[in-house]
Image 1 (cartoon, rainbow, N blue to C red):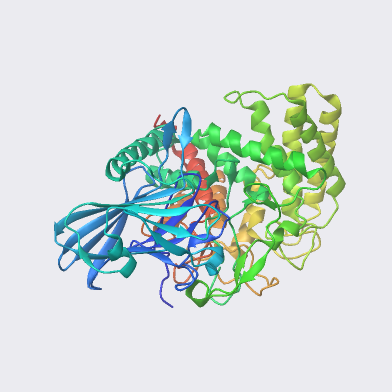
Image 2: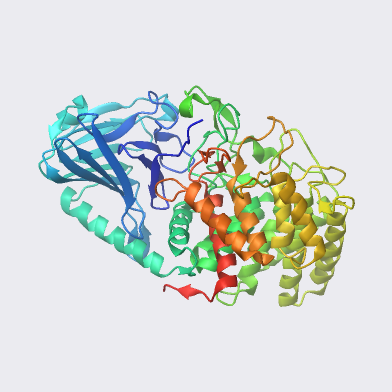
Length: 595
């Protein structure tokens, strides 16, 4: 089997995201929100997905991609028989009138480099997941695409006839294109593009300068931090799991899920990364999103939410070809109906910095305190209730060890908050839940093998059990931790250091690919157990073989081929990289601050 890598770079401005391939085609872009229908979706269907491409006239060319240094601005360079050129793609983002300016506009600047290359420009947006083909209306220097809820307009200095007929023309000077949703570009095209480009470059470089990193693989951490930022929907503070839907975990697996939503279950890992990166504004906005969710839920918390918190992400199957013919193509995610009781601990861990971190404004609102008590009581209520677990088993409910771990971690956070409030009742409840959750974790211990299992009374193992060490439940220096890890390694670790989530059959059979964040958890565990040389070797193997040409990570990696699978870019793979790098760095040396 050949090695498969995702041939895409990502741009965005915290209002939208776009994936652009090495042919300068926008293969995926959803408007007006991350979880809206695509405008361009050739990633999932080369007919119903439309296209927005800038390609050489002839197929005999080579191309390459790179980011402008320390930005989310993408350059695709073409070397052709008749010359060369590059396409600069960016989503404007900078501070204007003391607020982030992040319009629903994508700017494309085409720059001739050598010779007289002939290019073909095509722009055919779609709507309603390929069901809507808009009507084209031509102006003097723009094309309106009618049929959307808000106006979509292409403003350009390229002859409109060339675009409409997809006719090749000589690129003898710089050309400019702006596609907008809602408010169109009304200012001058060329100067506005160049001003916006300069401001966006300066914005991202300043953002990187204000990012705390450490010496260990700083370049990979910076790219992961920039990718994390792009997955923030700043309007509400939500952070999505991935930009895409229905990219298969492995060919033929039918494990094709929509990840364009926010999972509470991943709050701890994202917050840890943001804290280490010193991006407290995003941390506060994300915590505010979680707070709004929790205050609205009035009882049980669902495991995932739409980025606007409005409505349910009802799952349905679309009549699309699918990525490389892989079906079904799903939008929405039925997992919102699941019971995942670790969410209460995740909420408490999320809220803790708002009270305890002196770098943040100490928030003493009564509503937050009430939310802490509510979360503790929900831990108490669900302590011995089976759930679907972290991996969202669709047909299985168990007493999951990982859930008990977050009961324990959340109760620890609750106890710290109680001490800050001098609330004795809250403290007594939290301390009691710490003991109860620890007791439940111990019920998952297999004495014969010396390992904690996936759930009480179940022999199966899974990679989430690494977190018993990483989150401090097990002392990494203890014999119990060493034996626990030894058994996990024997069953879940691959020869190269990748890690399977689990190897037993679930609702869809046995998993074929490894889960990348689990490998980064393993790296963290090795570093905490002072197996530092192994941790570094595996980390470097992960970023060398697991990333695509731009350093972007997918959800899954196939052990034998090194192929990328699953949704892409997968935010939590990048979060895993950041957390693992910081864990190693703290063992190696003191942090190096860029700001």
